[in-house]
Length: 124
Image 1 (cartoon, one colour):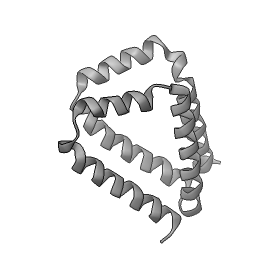
Image 2 (spheres, one colour):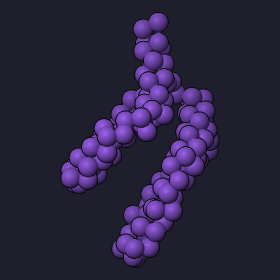
Image 3 (cartoon, one colour):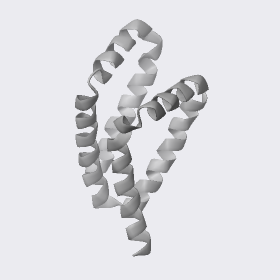
Image 4 (cartoon, one colour):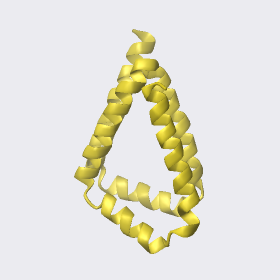
């Protein structure tokens, strides 16, 4: 198996385990985990950034940045399915982001860089 196939297998197995364990995990214990994991936004951002760089490295060995970008849009649509089930929560999150837009500078910078990269690949 290629590195990308290994990553896909790990993710798929992780998703299956996560979905299968939902009926057996108490919501309070799950929330403790979420609060612990998301409690330090700097550390969480560093971890996710590092994982994105490693994953991006392996993806770029097999596909182009344009294909990665389109795959990202596909994943955004799948996430939107979940968000659509909780519109009030999404509106609350959107309001929170707009109140403190400076806190979103890093992800916006990442998206800006990726968008510029894709435009460069497509048109230059």
